[in-house]
Image (cartoon, rainbow, N blue to C red; front, side, top):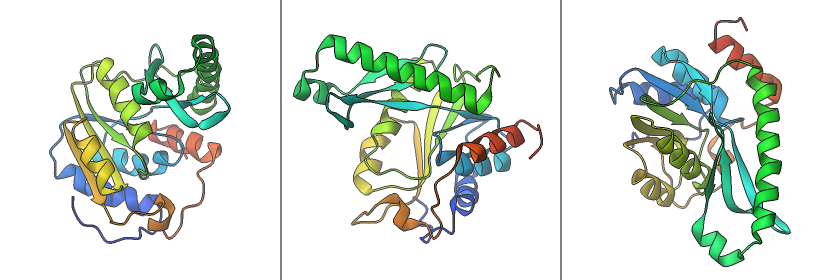
Length: 221
């Protein structure tokens, strides 16, 4: 925890500050993976500063019947997209197996659509055997990050660092046990919505994601 002052000006500012903190960790030869959409501008700055490749890690929530915002788990992008279920939520809701299968397939199609939109047919960078820096623009509950971390572990990442500009102390404590290292610039208490800690928190558009990924690959702005 480096105690950076908040709010951050915007995601670019947060990414540059995060990059300097990550550099001090001495995490060798990493691949930077961004949780879209808001994590992409942050991760772009991190990858550029570290001279590291940038990849997307798309996560789609699998919602409960009639309450799509209540997550039963998440489908995480990969060579074979992985379903990571929240066991507590599954016990509480007890959804029919057919529902989980159908909703997972629906999210698989959306995940495929988004990857095609963002990166086309470019081969995905594999985390297997790599040091991975997982980046988002902030964490509220940590559910998405936790699913992403579990999936990256299952894909064989050598070591995992979670790097975010801001997150609540409870999420930092919980996620610290899931990764090899964690870099969080600010962890205010009480914690409010992530957007409160940015002067400019305009929604990142699909077009911005595509442009940043092209620039990261050297295809021009």
